[in-house]
Image 1 (cartoon, protein in one colour):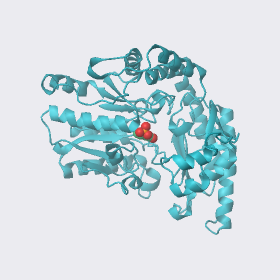
Image 2: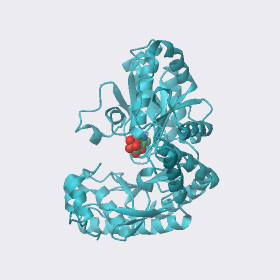
Image 3: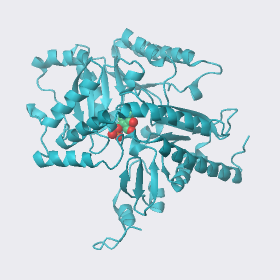
Image 4: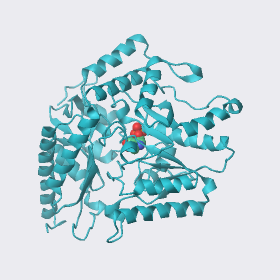
Length: 468
Ligand SMILES: Cc1ncc(COP(=O)(O)O)c(C=O)c1O
């Protein structure tokens, strides 16, 4: 137990319950169970305040790519704080790390990407992309071209605009969202959404047709942008089916619609390539970065725009005056120093190649461990991003009812085995630090297998499930 605070004379756990409103947490459950307080970390492992060790199979929230506990990150952030801890980028002011990081990020990106606008979270960066898309069409004399198309199961954040793009009903229902002008097409989820016998290619063509029909129905002159994650993350780890993005991009080009690639999770090596854009040959007009940009040592995100968008902004500038958008902390020097050091470490340690190799190992071992398990419908993923979907009936492809509470229960069982992970509905997600080793992976999967076995035993005991 954490020692009681001498001033307040209550434990840290009780102080948490008395003072914090936790994101994405059931208030009732939290008041009952209290927090797990993480106090230390090294590489892919963390320790809580009770001294329990865990493998961090989610890298925090898909973000601690270079791993926990890097002293040289602390040193880089400290050195920058000693020089100048804060200066902003408003009104032509600047700071050195922000300039250098923007330059470095552009070197890593496809050549047609042109300018970096720094923000503090993935949600803010996606909001920024939407505002830039609106601004772009205002400047082009197309003020009616404003609607945004996103996808069901897509995740783009929680601010009012980002949550409107997110395609998860639970983010909408309590908040009167989505806002007007935000539309959703079907998720590219072959396992759940393909028709019987439909190949991935056929499925991709059908989804592109659905997008085309929606655009025609709404009128292409009213649609500004389409947003997509290269691999869906928080919607359940859904890689695109074969041919998906090439079909989708044809439709977007035909209708003069901007493509925003939300690289918040996929960027910076997670898929075994620097960006998802490289892996799937995407040609985005805008790219959103966060998480891996600083490996979450300090919050930072970026909305990156292409030459095509920049040209319109630049040409419009004499008439419109200043670009009237910006966050106090956008381009914060401490975050930018963390970003520069993250990229230096990634390059020095070849972490993208490492993620490619160890990612292939994770994918193979997950399939060996779980594909034949009667509780598992599908194992899917790319690189160091994977999902294991638990189903009520494997042969008939019947999902568990939400009332069974598979997600929270399996999370609890895996925590007890020493794996912090994230259950997305009925899918066990994996997104570990890129520095994870094959030995860590073996241990993580042994622990997961024990947890899933316990889950199966509980379900059988309750009469909720029968092994085939
Ligand atoms: C693909 C994607 N976009 C945007 C976001 C939102 O980022 P943030 O939580 O930093 O606002 C997330 C967060 O998980 C994400 O996965």
